[in-house]
Length: 60
Image 1: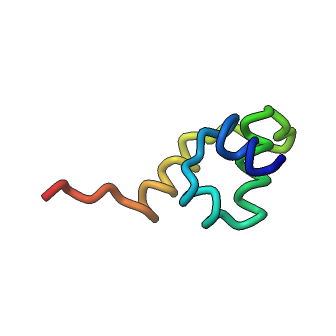
Image 2: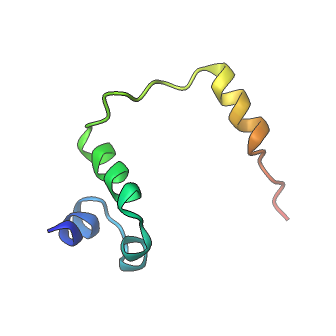
């Protein structure tokens, strides 16, 4: 049942599915089903912090 949901509803490939942790699968499933009640929108300060922590690399 989980494999059917992962490959079908989530659109994962077999390699992606089998390398996911249970926590990652749970988050993907909840996101797909719209079950995240605690998710907040990212504000400008949060986006700026993420951009600083994980800057885009120039394509080479």
